[in-house]
Image 1: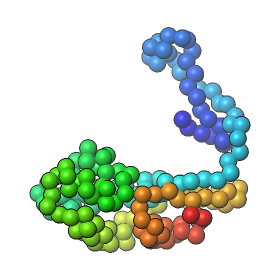
Image 2 (image 1 turned 60 degrees about the vertical axis):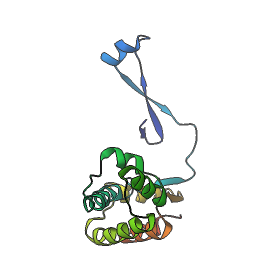
Image 3 (image 1 turned 180 degrees about the horizontal axis):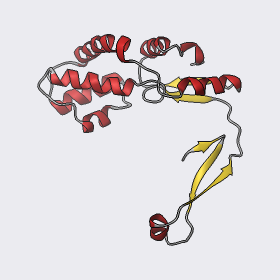
Image 4 (image 1 turned 135 degrees about the horizontal axis):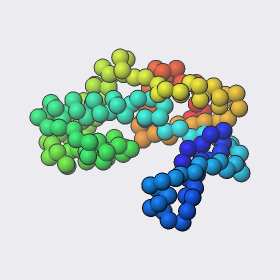
Length: 165
């Protein structure tokens, strides 16, 4: 569902025949949301910053060094998992001889090279933060990344002081 000014957009079928309504008409109507927003929780990766794109580069690099491919399926399965769990999944599925600690260290080294050049805020982030500032809404960041990494990323794009964590 999409929202506009706190209202949800709902699809409203014009008939009870769902197949006909999917193939023909769709009516969009707006319904006011009865609750006020008290705070905002942001997902960091892919919403605030382009780190999902960078994770893909890291995964490709790590597996390419081992003559393997970082597939979309593996990426999808690893996304959102805490680092050690994701690395263990990679080790198991790709039958790697590496340890979790070795992959984490290698990942940190690759990220250290990528972040200064490739890290970027997602489009519209700062406009949204400005709107939340104007409305004095507290906000926090939810991420499966470590706190030091989240702090580093948000500091680099100039957003660390814009969240209450």
